Image 1 (tube, one colour):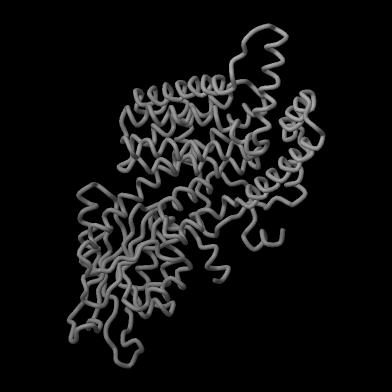
Image 2: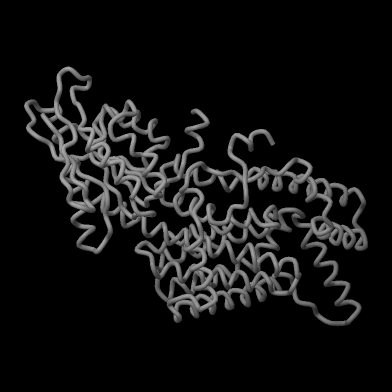
Amino acid sequence: MSDARKHLPSSPGLLIAVIGPPGSGKTRLLAELAAGQRVQGGRIDGFLAGAGEHHRVGEGASSYRLTLLATGEDLPWAEKDPACNPPYRFVPATRQRLHEWAAALPAKSPLVLLDEFGRFEARGEGLMSLWPALLQARPGVVVMTVRAGVAEAIETRLGRRFDLKIIADSPGALAELRQACADYGEWTRIGLFGGASGGLEMTLGTVLHASKLPLRGVVMSSLQAGMMVFTSLGLAQPGRVIWVPFISAGLKALSPGGSRLRPMLAIAAQGLLFGTAVQVLGANVAGFALGGALVGVWAAMQGILLQYLFLGGELFRAYDAVVLWIADKAHVTAPGLPWLIGAWAIFCGLVGMMAALAAWRLRAPPAALQKLIEREQSSPNQARAGSTRETRPKSKLHRLREFVRWQFWLPFVVVSGILLASGHSWNAVAWLALRFLAVGVVLLTAVSLLRPARWAQRLRQWGWWGPALAFSDAMARHSPPAFTAEAAKKH
């Protein structure tokens, strides 16, 4: 696949092709979609094609007219001419009027319908000349009828794949079209709240991390639980809230502390746990309570689990040695590690549950969070303007700096000191150091390979246009000045 196809522009947010031969009902589908959207008060732009007589099944009509949906203008567009190949000639005045319409298309039009893209457009002619001007308007959803057999050629001319391809004469074509338009609004909301959640992590989360205040993890996890509740209350499919923390985790990677494994892992896992609870129990008090509790429990446990991954059973042996020493000196019975971990997890789970239930009672974000969301909504969307951006890749030297941070080595030093003081050999400590370093190399290498700016591209390639839309919108609002993909390859 060429570089141009790897780094496709993200405008419009959703690109749908309705595919079929002449007479298969493509225009009828668009007309019914437009009528339904108007009934719901939606704004629609674009044009529909009206065909003259069809002398043979599967062949083009004798002539075509275009109707502009916004103004109702009826314009002659093409007439059959056997001397041409394909056998049609276009009306120059209508071509000029279409270019005027495309140049004046309102910015961020929610739904644009483009009828009758065929062999001319596959060659870059006809209606294809309108595409650059349409991109400048950054439309939300574009539905395009495409003649059967030319879809791939049209994609090449557009510079991106279709997110959905709907067969015009399939039984559920209209329902699928309407559902896609509804889902677009839902995924836009997820991107909005995911971006706001990421903004919290990049600002407040970074400040709390730098301040080393106690319970900072509990504070951030409680805020994230509340944000997920607020998002879920506006979704037809609440389980999709799982993507809010994944977006937040991707944005966290762009912050000054973005290379840290713990915060990114914690944020992503919170979404998985909360989304699962809501998916199973529903967007109700039970689902939110369980989701908030799971978020809090994970906030309490994820640091311990990560250190266990680094240090294995030696972590618990070191704790037992300290507990026994304290108990012997103070002549008291110290609690076992499982009791301490359990109590801490219960406390954090209750805090997360209360935060989720408070958000459920409020039903809408408080003033401070609402302002953050409004700023997110009004932020310029760079990705819709054209080329995909990529952040500067971190050099190998930058990645190695993680190994010289004292915070990275502190757990190993403490555990090693306790083990040596309790009679363990230097050989055991050496093997522990080897494990610690090996796990660190694997994890930090994995994190360094995470390229959030490319996540949306991968999701689109896998057919997940909704998460891709939500993520690319959030990334565009928060990405710092960056390189193009070609420049990124040089670093």
